[in-house]
Amino acid sequence: MRKAVFIYSKELEKYRYPPEHPFNTIRAQKVREIVNKLGLLSGNGRREVPPEPATRVELKKFHTARYLHALKTASERRHGLPAREDTAKMAVPQALSMGIGTPDCPIFAGMYEYSVLAAGGTLVGAKLILTNEADVAFNPSGGLHHAGPEQASGFCYINDVALGCTVLAEQGKRVLYLDVDVHHGDGVAYAFYDRCDVMTISFHENPRVLFPGTGFTNEIGEGKGKGYCVNVPLPIGTYDEAYMKAFETIALPLIGSFKPDVFVLQSGTDALAGDPLAHLHLTNNVYAEVINHLLSFQKPILMVGGGGYNIENTVRAWALAWSVLCGANTDSPAIKNVFLDSTDRQGGLRDRTLVITDQQQNAVMPTVEATIDAIKLKVFPIHGL
Ligand SMILES: [Zn+2]
Image 1 (tube, rainbow, N blue to C red):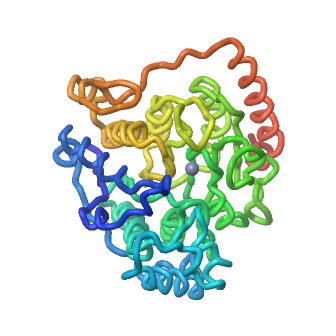
Image 2: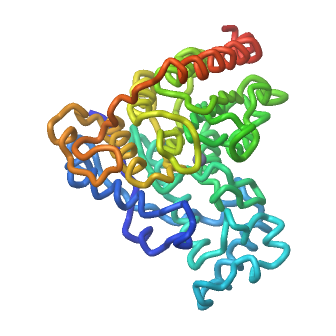
Image 3: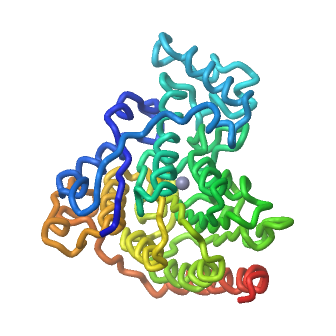
């Protein structure tokens, strides 16, 4: 029996990004509702645990004091101001230079409290894994992989994932960070760029066409960390079969040679077909398959959320991901027939298989194969592969 912890509390529902912002915190609440309805929050080793706000000492393991101060001050100033007040106008230049108060990272009421609580959820998961109280944990409110030590970026203020990996590595764990968000997991990759105890593997859409513009195959780490940062950029239109080919030929051998003690999985779902901010063509079956692969290594998994801007598709994918992670039978009638208000289908967590045209195949597969070859050439020899 797998000890599975779902990290959530109603406290998170107090906070929202501005209504016009694509990042919607309601996703975690909706996932929680579905998995609760399915009976997947208790019994068989499963339980729900609330997040605790990350402490200042914890936050400073990645972020600078100057940045935390600016973030907190901006958040406090926001309270009591009318909602329509232009956040750029009230951002002090120093905060703005750290990305706080930009259109991507607007200042909103409770911004600091929310970010610290969401990050604390990931840390709760890491601690429960370290004390063997959890084999797998999922914080759907985490996964804010773009934040830098002194930079808010790409909807992210506090980098819970870099913090989670740090806490695990501090205890001597070899951490395999896998990032399947459609955007490069830059904040986490660069946090461990010169380290060989945390390997980061990021699958994402071609950085030439998508934020943050980094994550090319030649970014492989430096110093002791050379070969421990792996980037798999994928062309527009990448579909399940092409994605899994890249995953199985790149990630699996590297995981096998790295021999991690623990996995941290950033499970952003903006790589799904129909995401309004990106251009990959995956179904959520990829997420289930990736998790099944990780489970086969029989090491703890700390899963966090991330991007995902088609809300219903994201909710369904994360509910499916949790079902797989916590060991539910995903072919059971209860999970197959759960009623969802989905854009794609009603009845079941799994997406339908998408039809792939010859034209799409010809446009995608050769590029993916060239990427695989490039990574094999640059990274594999460092690991004796
Ligand atoms: Zn993303």
